[in-house]
Each structure stands twice: as C-alpha cells, then as structure tokens.
Image 1 (tube, rainbow, N blue to C red):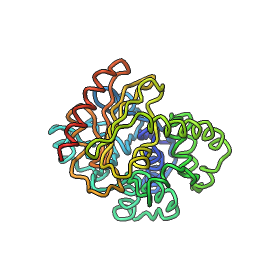
Image 2: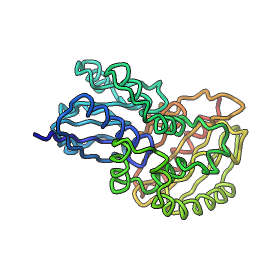
Image 3: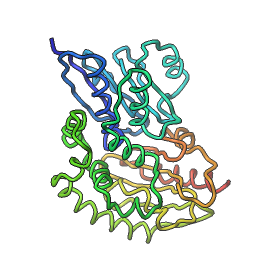
Image 4: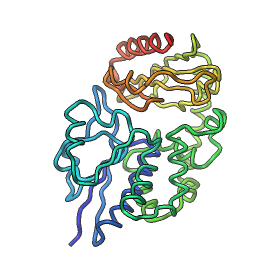
Length: 322
C-alpha cells in the first residue's frame, strides 16, 4: 500500500528547495516501500509565521527550513533558524520529543547541510552524490561568497536559479525541481535549463535597475545602510547590493512593499571591516519577525507601510549605537 507523505519547505528559498529534496532521499532510505510525496511551500506571514495544521495532511508529515509546530501531526522536522523555536511552550515541547526524527541546530549555516550531516551520522545514509546541491545551498544561505561582487554579478547558474526561485518560487515552480533533485538529477542540469534562463533574463534586468535605485536612495550613517524601496512594486531584491555599493558598511536595513506584504529586511555585511556585534534574529523577533544572527526580517500587511518605516527607524537607531 502506498504511504502518503507531505513535506512543507521554506518557499521562495534555495535552501528550502534543497532541504526538501534531501529529506525525500532520507525518507526513502528509512521507510522503503511505496511512497507518494506532496510538497507545499511555507512563507513568512505578517504578524508571525506558523505551519498551518491543515497542511499536515499526510500519513507522515515533515517540515524543513521553517518554524516548529507542536502539532501531533508533525513527524519529521529540520531547521537551523534561531527563531525556529519561539517561546517557552515550543522549546519545552521540542525538548520533550523522543521521536528521534526532529532536529534543530541554529549553529548550522544551512538546513541542507544539517540534513546531510544528520543523514550520515544518525541514519547511515551517504548523500555525497548531492554534494553540488549541498555546496550551493550552504554557500547561498551563509553568504559565503568571496566578495560582494560575486554575489551581485549572478554569473554562476546556481545563483541565477536562486534569483528565479526568490521571485517565482511557488509550488508550481519549485515542486517539479524538488522531485528532479530528489531523483538524483544534478543541480547544474536544473540550473542551466532553458526555462530558468528565460525567467532569469527579465529578473536580471530588474536586478540591474534595483542596483541603480538603491544607489540613489540608500544612505550610510554610522556603518548602517538604510533605504526605502516602497513604490518600486516588489519586495524582493538581491540582499548583497548594499554591501557592494557600500563596502565599509556593517549593517543594512531596508523597507520594501510588494502585493502581499510590507517588509523590513535587516542584514549584516559578511565582508565588513568591523565585525557584527548584534543578533539580528533577536532584534527582528521583538517586532514579530525572525531569522538568523546575521540576517532577518519583519513581515507586515501590505497596508502597514508606515509601521514598517517606524520599525526600520527603531532598528537603524539600535544598530548605530554599537
């Protein structure tokens, strides 16, 4: 009899896609037999993010690269965000879990690497055949590029795929690619697919426009770059642009507005001459957002632009103090 498995993954995210593909391989290794997979993307929502209980509709349910759920219907979980567990109730629930199939380590740079290492160490599954996918997911999520220019130039096919995912990474686009990666298809074949190239070309043109708009609007004060992209019509931009334009900066705070949300993005310059001293996930969490120590965001309703600007002003003030 076929077993129905549902996997939730962080939508519009290269690491989320890669994590879902590796977990699929791990579950096939562990469970065997006839398995049917359903994948669904999870995006951060205004006022806080959560896993809808109704989405956990399989005989076995998993979530990767996204927040924890205390639902009894969640069977497997991998995450590496500092805000993957929120509040005492979630921390206590996770601490009591004895399933051996829920894994959380905020010290990991990517969820993909966490799954790969856990598969090898806990389940005797060697995922080195997916080393190209693991490498790029980890490089992208840790911002481990040699310099900002590499991240902004987007010359590598994997970075072009990343760019497409960030804009077009809904289930219709991501799920077929999760399935191909889970079946063992190499990342470079998927990244160099003509369909990806066709979607990337207009995005690259917009990316170049964003570089100019950010250059015009950005202000650097006491090591913090701030800019407001409301009115541009999109809430996504290459997060490395400000560090390319202002290599001396330590942090960046930006306000963006898209059709579904207003957003305050906060990041730290991986190549800054002065090391980061703030936990960005903790700062964003105070406003209902989250993320990592080095990057985070706060999502609001699209109509709450003034609130987003107010939050951004408070965060800029905090970051410029030390």
